[in-house]
Image 1: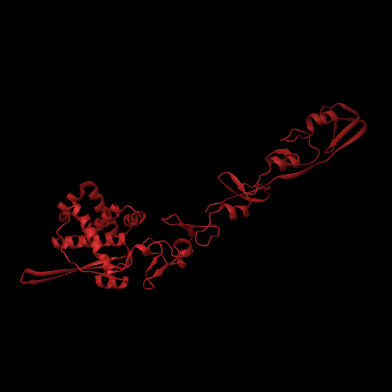
Image 2 (image 1 turned 90 degrees about the vertical axis):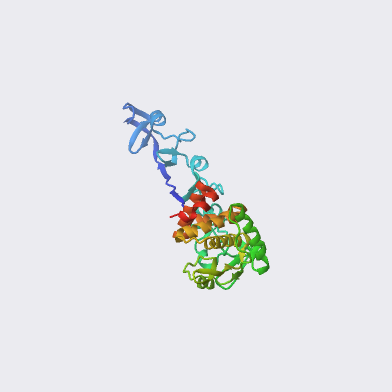
Length: 358
């Protein structure tokens, strides 16, 4: 938050001149002798007319002569009343006069207290003014940076979970959290998986990925650490894992099986995107592709992108942005490279050339 400060610096002066009667003197303005009434200013003598016409100050607002005290600002002189009524800055919030330090925003001046209480943005969590750095999330909420250390974020939409932003939420295992905004659409029961598999396979079929194995078991895992253990990966950002097992006799494969694991309590669209990613792992295994990790994971993330693009919701846009901004060499950079190829070649070109990508 950037605030401009400026200090009022008007000066109040007293114009001390005397009007006297003289027997003889010389006017310091015209050089002629003075008789009768005359004016003294700074030990200099003036004819009354010379003083009034050439020496006496005039108010730069009303053009009337100044006698007694006056206010000077930026080389201009004012009657105190003229200055207060017409020149002195007023607060754009309360319309009262400003003296001393004040704040400027959009060429408007404010008392510091008015600026803090009425002009500064308010934290959407604690409702206090934000006077320093703040965070604005994808959903347009702004809040003090300190709240990110005190509140958990939703595993789906990344909102900070609190009553003002999400109406609360729940903990899955004290490590993962879901907000009340996302709660109505989470996948937390095995009965919900059939719909997800059907919809995802239909999307993949439209781009040329079909004949995937049927009846692949899908198990939901609540604990991300357990998913990491199953996969053997070290990445804490993992949401799914595909286990493949093949039995061979000699050099011939006599049976093979797949098992997909997905985090529980993901929103339906996020669950679908994870499932699409894992089904593209199945596709690669099924076709015997042994790809470099960035190509392998980048290609699988095209499945997630397909789901999010088809959905088009704000949550999908958030997930896509996160994927494109990821600094992970496989899930981030690898995905961006494959996305660029998809833009150039389309799905048919991707599928036809996937084994040759380096």
